[in-house]
Length: 101
Image 1 (cartoon, one colour):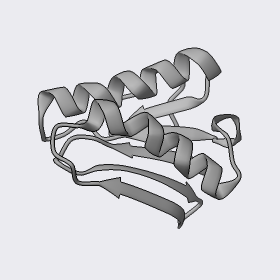
Image 2 (cartoon, helix red, strand yellow):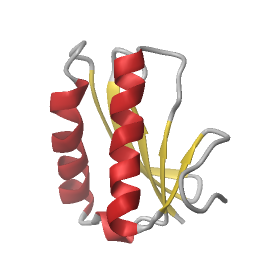
Image 3 (cartoon, helix red, strand yellow):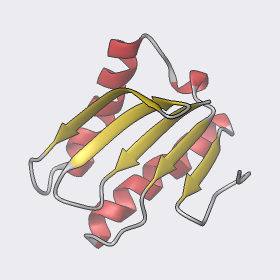
């Protein structure tokens, strides 16, 4: 199972792709208050570096905090948008959009 993981709750914005229990690639950026600008380029970069696409993912996950409200909102909105376009399973800790594992 391939998982796209997004963390925007803290001052560090990170994106990772995991397969089963192994991290394939992780990117992070610690420029505070730039998550809305940095997140999508990081997603694009991680897919380019791993030769994968969003459609290769089996699950998309993000954290729900604790952390900055704006940061959490950016992560959840991004995951929700990915779900709306692809119907890939999504999860946010114990809560989910669409189908939950």
